[in-house]
Image (cartoon, rainbow over all chains, first blue to last red; front, side, top):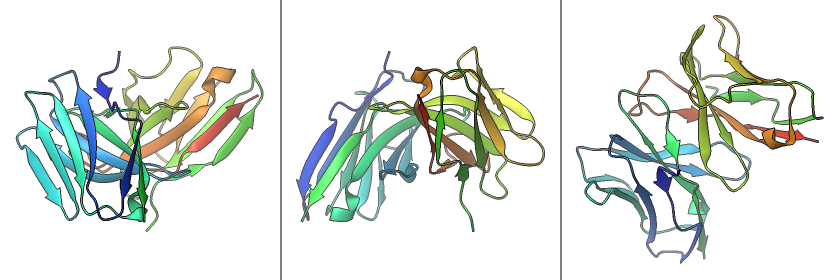
Length: 112
Length: 115
């Protein structure tokens, strides 16, 4: 029973182009949405987040969009750089809660 | 300015042995979380602890697994009588406060291999 789905296991993008990573969820109880980035043999690193009262949050090259009615979250990276190549996990949680629920991840490869 | 530290980074155990995984949170963080990542899967929450207290263990298997976060020292995730299915990467995270709006800082993980 997957509460969080990242339907694309992998994504390949050319340097300078936009990378769009997607995440769908099933439960409306979540009120905080996060993206983590993970390199091999390292732990996940927080990238960007958004609360349920917003529909967009931007931080430099990274923008997260939230569509609550569609229960859909996306991360846009523009322009993409080779150093962005990593596994990206979306994670959902509650401001009042503790555990984060993670998707399976999307492996992004940015070629130069 | 150390982040979350986990040791050992790699642990090999034979079936039936015990595995002890240690996690030292970011200095000043009193909230610790353990997650497990099976191959080709996302991270799955196991347990959330504050100093000396287990707050949420809804993700912990009912048997063989236990966790503690003593007043002094690191948090320990203990797996008794390991089986092959316990082979995974175990990540610890810490935060200064509870709630998803407080960033959880992750350690590099312990990769457990059960032979």
